[in-house]
Length: 203
Image (cartoon, rainbow, N blue to C red; front, side, top):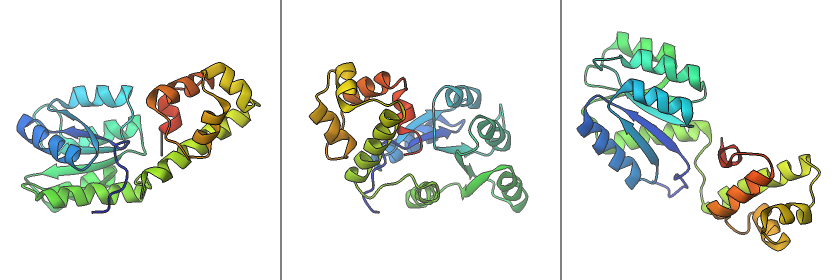
């Protein structure tokens, strides 16, 4: 596996079996992703309504709500989210139905760890959200900060006055030469009237 940057990729894991949630969550963390696991689909949908997730791993058969309905609800919240169905009961009808509702992949349980990771990798590459290195991510964040600053007709000096960062520090961040700390990103985004997530969404 290439060592792309993945810690910004948030994965929603929904399975009524807590042990599967835990296993999949740890596996994703080991591969650099940021998972959130839920054994209750209603709680997962509430979380997706409040936070941004790029990928969802969803069990097809759950007592409270089946995977097809979960996919529909998640797509209503964010149609860009890639949904991957996990099921111990693979059959053509359910695969066809979930694909029609907007899933991008289908994994039969029990799955090999590499199959699950490969499925997520494919989804990430389709969405263009894996980078080859940290430098590329820094460059893209810097570009976004610069475009927001220019759109507001702010000079580096004016942004510096608002953020307590030096113009040199800001310039290095905008050029992607230095990684901005979370603290610095929070100061910059606040000064531009943005949430930190708005600077990172889609990157």
